[in-house]
Amino acid sequence: MINEQLSAYLDGEASPQETDNLIAALKRDADLRDAFSRQHWLRHALREARPVQPDAGFSARVLARLDEQPAEQQALEQTHTNVVSIPRGDKPARAARRWQRPTAGLAIAASVVGALVLVGNPLTQVDDTAPSGEAALAFTQPANLQTAGVGSSQQVASASQAARVPPPDHWAVSDPALEDQLNGYLLEHDGVARGYGLSSATPTSLVRVATYGTGQ
Amino acid sequence: MKRLLPLIFIVATCGAQAEGDDWLTKASQAVRTSNYRGVLVYLRAGQVDTLRIVHRYQDGNERERLVSLSGEPREIIRDNGVVTCVLPNRQVVLVARHSIGNIFSNVADLVADGLQDNYDVRELGDERLADRACWVVVVEPKDEFRYGYRLLIDKQTNLPLKLEVMRDTQILEQMMFTNIEFPETISDASLQPTFDTRSFRWIKHQAAESSATAGQAVESEWRAGKLPAGFRMAESGWRRVGGGGMARQLLFTDGIATVSAFIATVSSKPFVGSTTMGAVNAFGREVGNKQITVVGEVPEATVRFIAEHLEQRPVSAAAKP
Image 1: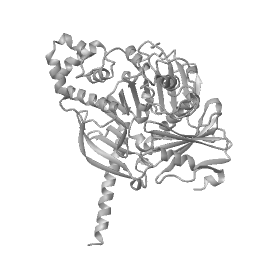
Image 2 (image 1 turned 120 degrees about the horizontal axis):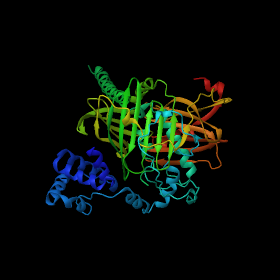
Image 3 (image 1 turned 30 degrees about the vertical axis):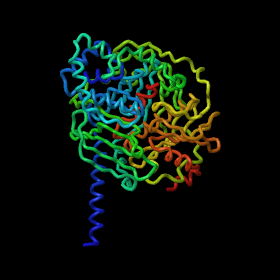
Image 4 (image 1 turned 90 degrees about the vertical axis):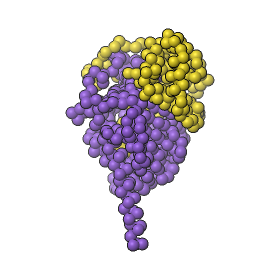
């Protein structure tokens, strides 16, 4: 559980309560501090897109910093310190930041067709009725009726296939129909390939599907 | 003695190779037949995603659930050959079925004939990850038609806890568990989706069909006139495409990497050229009224090569080996 809170924290998705819990856990758990250092370093290294050596003293500095402050002030102040650089905030705030990025135009276009991975792809058949017992799905929570503010497909102005430098979780195309088609082909490929080669030894294919378009 | 030395070297080399291959075979079995749950981090250039994964193997059935912990909420459930994707923000459920048959028989294909001609598979000591001792196994390509891989394989369970996909010395993708546990049993409840999907739109993928059941009048067959060294065709089938059309799918593998070629009737906007998504590449070309699209987790040179060497032959000629 605490590791999930740590991941959520580093992704900026931890609630204030989870943040407080995590800070308390960091103070008493050396292994967790190591995990924190490792994950923070991974994120930093990849975002910088250049080799970065792990900072062995990072967790120690975090701990020292925590020890300097009264517990009730820590959660608030962590959001402003450059030492820890712990993101914080609720999901809507994070989503808003995402849409403000310079690539938002491309992201909007991609999200309309891409975030669904396969909706409308050329390999699908639409069935608007819920299946009778298929996949044996149980229902443990009310539906999340949120919809992302992604605009309409009319915002996708270009149907050209000119390649762009995309986020690593999107095809480098600007044609929504083509993106759909490639996603469909990729899922079909992964489904069949799972019995062969390295695809059979790692959960790569499902992870790709689960994270498609999440970085927009 | 001098004449014996090369032979000793060859025997020693083959022995080491077999050991490396054995790790991969064990890893492939472990990923299907183990009970495990944990948090997995997926790293690509400048982007990190975290997922919770639960996997159960019980009474010969494999069931798995992935929940995205960052970005858009998403849940994916695999029940043997049926993959169900729940996309709550869109209120959509996608169901894909694949006729996997006895999928475990295919695991043997991991160690394909000639694998040693195209990869060096070596075990390079050990490392710790997620508080567990792991073997380090490196799969090094011998040409530009395939990626390299570095795996950390749990010593106790043989489950791969980390995978790096590499091109030369550049890491294209990483997938690693930041924590993992191996419970004796996993409850049904932990494999159920979080969301109430009753009001969602359900979209079903057509299962693979043989050419006979697809009702196609097959007068000609597609095949690769030439393939990158080590690749061979492993499967061939049909997929139903939008509007009732069909696409032919050919799966190629070199024992490690896999590539699919799709052949369908060309659309009004054909896909010509190459595109990429992380470590995955695609290449498209038109041949007559057919659109060829080749997709796989291989370098661009490989999808291009396969696409450019697909050809149509009369079915009688294609049937001959």
